[in-house]
Length: 274
Image 1 (cartoon, rainbow, N blue to C red):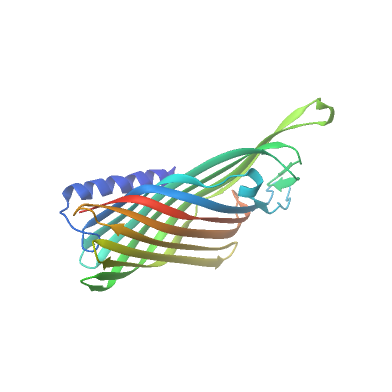
Image 2: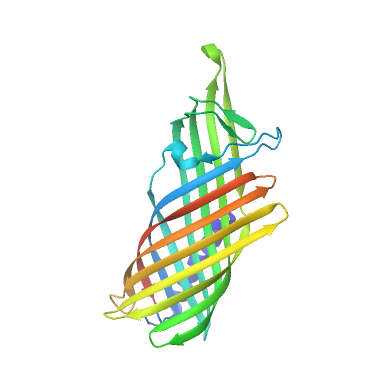
């Protein structure tokens, strides 16, 4: 919910700034908003240990277990050049999925054991809100290079639901277990944009984070490249690719275990500049 509200606030601020800004192009404009589709493929691996029983969970490949393939999601990216060499950048998208499948093996997840043959529904949710401050390190007529510091707010959760019938069909019981984490992750990054012939612009973005502290070990990497054709002074069309990876080992109340969540894929979007 917190990520959702902040994402809506980011888009609202983008609309206000666009309404007040002048024309431009992706290299020297005050405001750039990219809105479009994100054609994702994911790789989710999770181990959730039990809080009450102390049971060690199994390593689970979520996508293979439930047969979830590629899919499309809405995505918005914003760049606001505030003044001089200073700018603010943001990204928001959400991904919620569920799939039901018959388990091919016993699975220990949290405090529950899901037996082989149980018809089980797997649920996953990921919301990402990224906000960064950038400072221009070098700027020329045909390119701009900037370094930045920011934060990724990740709201990630996974859960299993099943109805298990006892031998002989005399009784059944409901199994439900889930784990979630929403820690903010600081990042260091680099951004570049280059003007190419025929009103084409190329951009590149790299961000990274690593921490090893107390009961928390994790890393995050975010790589993105796009190519935009600026069809008019205010509107362009673009294609790109984003590769995003994070993994954590946690010992917390709502998530005790390991989580590795990779996603990546092509993007197709409309770019509005002012």
